[in-house]
Image 1 (cartoon, rainbow, N blue to C red):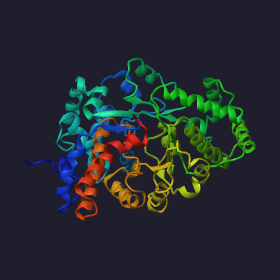
Image 2: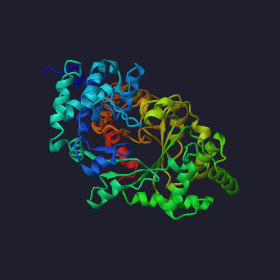
Image 3: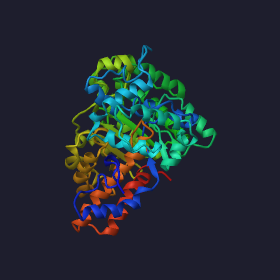
Image 4: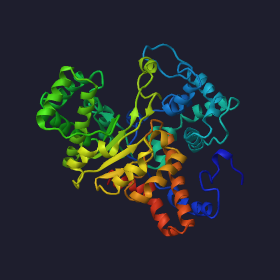
Length: 471
């Protein structure tokens, strides 16, 4: 049997024998395991309303900042790619944007985006031809015709992909109206929210004063006092747990944490509420809030995720025209040992704390994160994230962390995506890479075949359930 090169069944497996044959043997044990997606950014409205998607561009192009940023790097206009503008001015329609995407699809050679999109086209639509200018219209029309079918509604896609649990991510001030709807029809549990309080913990946000005031109003707490502010978080976390939340998430530019005396915390809050804080105050406030979030996790058992090291929204023109999360984000160096010192010193030995670290600074894997996770019982290493959620990124990650942290201090995999159909594709890349990595160890006689299969199953499924305490 012949296969298209981009969908070959041995893709990503080791090229050399005997490792390739061992990877082939391991893969069937993990290929069809249910998917646990404990962190991501899919739109909860999709699952609450369960309405059809509009066209190929709305599924594969406009919501995917991985795709948009590379096209932008070659001078393509976001208007021509159909990305909505704040001012409401017209942008290209779906077909025109899709044609432009197809004409430039060759740019994605060697990127994980191409792996994900090729897999998604085959998985959801049975399309195994390459996307090119010549095939663009036919693929667009095939997708458009199929999107009306019941098996491609959002909930049916979760069924088809065998997604057992998927978590969305909402800010502290979000009313969770879509999750309320899902709670009413019994869908919470499979879909659940995640508490991301950046809107009230990050003073670098322009609306921080108004956000904090609103935070006090919706929780009924006096956020002008430090104890009242923490009570507001305690209140809001409890509310999020009603809608299935098992975790919190924190997007921070650095891993800095602090453990200030109460009088200094109150003085810092006073500055922020009066709008008199500077960049150093904002950093210190975020740092203290990370320690406070850890202490609240000790209380309520919610798993704490820290996504550190991204310099976000670095293009002011893109930000002013269209908003956040559209590709202009760049990794930065991060110091985890000194950054987390205050938090771990205060709560690192608490048996109820679970802190999962997501890393963009790969130089810290072997030097800092693996030794830290290999000692602190509260700390786990999250999977390769964002720029490193790729075949080579996964290989570098495993090479650098496993020998020090072991396999069981890793938090498994999550897909961290806004693109629904990429979820099974991303998990498949992880599972193939895990099989390839373990196959090499079996070939080197460092692991038995049976141990490799057990570890592959764990990292493909159970590790994420365990890390996030999902029952």
